[in-house]
Length: 147
Image 1 (cartoon, rainbow, N blue to C red):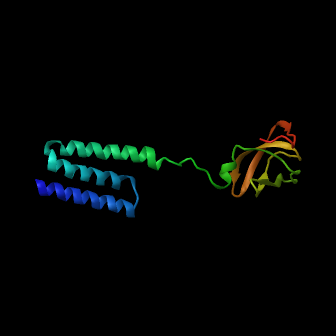
Image 2 (cartoon, rainbow, N blue to C red):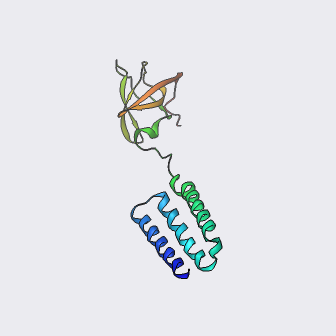
Image 3 (cartoon, rainbow, N blue to C red):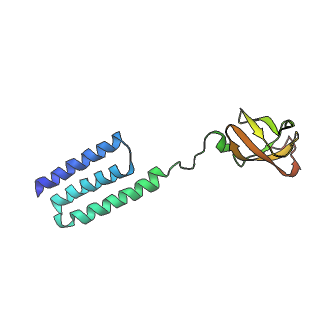
């Protein structure tokens, strides 16, 4: 029984090393469960299986909560502007298109309704590389006011 414990410890370490090469949630959980199973086979054989299963489940929970969900709501590209309020810098053309600079980046904007210079609008969605905006309550924002 002693050598079988060492075999499971070695197998657990190999699976954990495999996790380094191909990251995934379950390789680390299986590796830790095998490692703990091997250790418990050496010292407490009767508790080996339940503790190994419990350690694997705890590892999955910890990895899911603390590692794989971190940064899942990060938005990049045009999606990061959705919800932002902007002041229209110039009148939109007849088709409702225009240009705006946001965070030192030039973006195409479009609106279904006519927007004039100084109108307050909200970015509601993205279509390709164009930000879709809509006017906010017919308000005009003073250019001296910063949001």
